[in-house]
Each structure stands twice: as structure tokens, then as C-alpha cells.
Image (cartoon, rainbow, N blue to C red; front, side, top):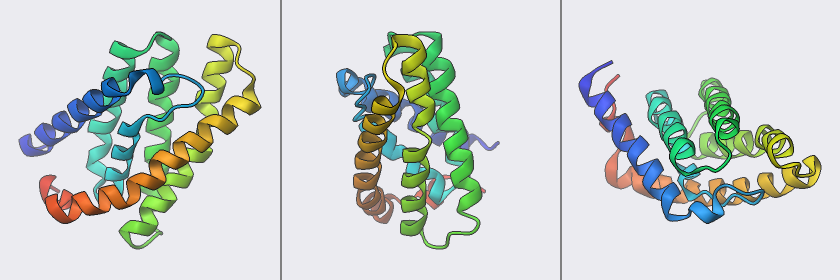
Length: 163
């Protein structure tokens, strides 16, 4: 991996942590308005962003979560699985906006992983928790589509990562 790609991924991980820390009380419950989840859309622009996003999730969960190994295991697994699905889907879904919408649906659907975590760790009811997590993830991710699209016009995410 090239130095520029590593540096950009380190910045993404740091940004993910910083944004997660700003809204920490709203990012670790059964209703998770974790605004930093918008960064998940970066894999639509380039799959190499996956590293920075997963690293950001890991560090955020390590430093900010009270659920310890549950969040390190389930939270990181959720991000890694969902991002990998999106990378594969984007080979078939053409267009960035369509890719981000597909990514939103993937992350919304796979929130069952976090619902299982909260069921095991805190005894939350699975179906209610899944519903609230899915809705909150959908809202954050769908709002992230125009935000990330606008940021891309200004920053050109493809140019920031070396292929």
C-alpha cells in the first residue's frame, strides 16, 4: 500500500473517531444516530477507503464504547461485512448515487448484527432493537448521500487515494 493511501486512511480513521466522539451519547444505544457512519459511503468512491473506515470503527469502539469486546467484535464485524458487500455490489451497480443508496440499504439490513450484540450484551429485545437500529442507520446513511456527494465535488475522493 502506498504512503498516500495509508495517510488518507489514517485521516479517515481519525475523522471517524472525532465525529463519533462528538455524538457519543447517541452512538452506542439501540437508537444509533452515529453521524460518522456517513463515511461508509467512501467505499463507493474507492474500495481502499475500507481500511480507514474499519480502523475508525475499531478505535471508536475501543475508546468510547462501554460494551467492551462486544462492540469490538460485533461492531467491527458489522462494518467489515457491510463494506465488503458494498464493494462487491458496486461492481454491478453503476453510478455513485445508486451505489450510495445500495450501501445505505446494505448497512440498514445488516444492523441485525448490532441487534444481536445488544441482545447478548444488554438483554435488549431483538426485533424492537433491530427496527430502531435499522431506522436510525437508514436516516444517517440516506442523509449522507447528498453530503458525501457534495464533499466529493469539492475534494474528489478518487484523487485522494492511489490505485
